[in-house]
Length: 332
Image (cartoon, rainbow, N blue to C red; front, side, top):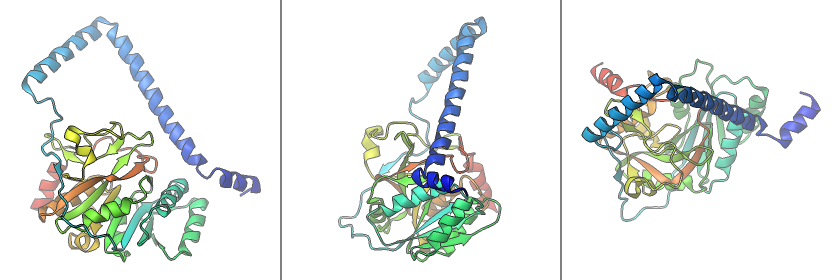
């Protein structure tokens, strides 16, 4: 690499990340502008006015016969902690699957280092990285006692990568973390561990925000049609939620594996993530199996991270219908 390029990298290590963010937001802006123009043209046509009238009528009929709330089949329940919560001392193994994107991985690891909880190790599951910058970063990390690198050259399967990392972990708790996250609250691990220490709890998740500080994840919920959704996605980060629930630790149907804490013993007992879900629904499936054991899945508003969703592998618009998959799994 030319010496000038190397100096430029050192001056601006996140230049490529910023460039990719700008590209993504510009693409979304262009898409929105095109849609806006199409809608303007449609509104001015006779057909457009007829379609608009039809949708207004349909909405009025729907409001007259349906609950106006999001049609979820489950709701969040406030979590009541034990009278005395011990200070967390457990060792945590943070499992991070990744492939290249060294600016994302470096930013994630830097934010971990700024946290106040020190009893943790990092298990990096390398899914075939080839970028020289990534390889140099890994060479440096291998020299540090806190880090362990697990190589996996197979086609991408998020469940399998996490399972491989879990088998190499030594901690009492496993914390599955996406490489495109950045910790915002310095005591995030303490917040998660205090909840996870409760014998009634199986899984603990964190609140995830987009870079503009709007909510990306505050729990996953099943809809009446069987799809799993993020009900508060896009709301301001300081939104109180229904009856103030976003300010409270609460029990939810599922949390995303982008940041998911579980006891290592329980994870191994359950057989880990189901590798038949290579990209999505692996977290929902795991949470459902945890709940089948009579344990709670919870989420904390006091552990917050930025999630640069989609920068590493692209954006998933909506999870597929999991109800059919789960019924199939139960009968096989």
